[in-house]
Length: 151
Image (spheres, helix red, strand yellow):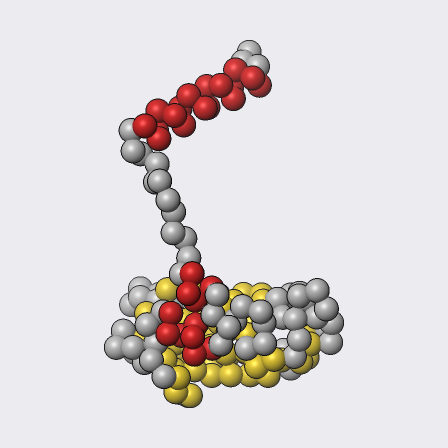
């Protein structure tokens, strides 16, 4: 039976071989820094290639009118617009507006649900970014009685 120490040594040796053979990435870019640091809805949309925001009936957002706990606010976003490449969920008054980004293709039904953390009552946006740079949105106000971002 192999001891824990031997298993760790063997794992370190395998990782060293992989790294020396350039089989592991030197640096991973898992997110869009400009979008993550965006403080406004427009800046977040621009970070994903969206031009000026236009309200649209082709985008829908659903969530509670009143969220009793801002730490877990259920939200759903969907679009029936053609040529959508990204669907964003954004909370206007959060320290960072971006909550979620979903990549859309012809093989995907553009309807998503998630839970967001909200620090205070705010407008919540669903923004559909199209292949030609349009940023279509819908918004809904969600009132928060107990803040989720330290409130």
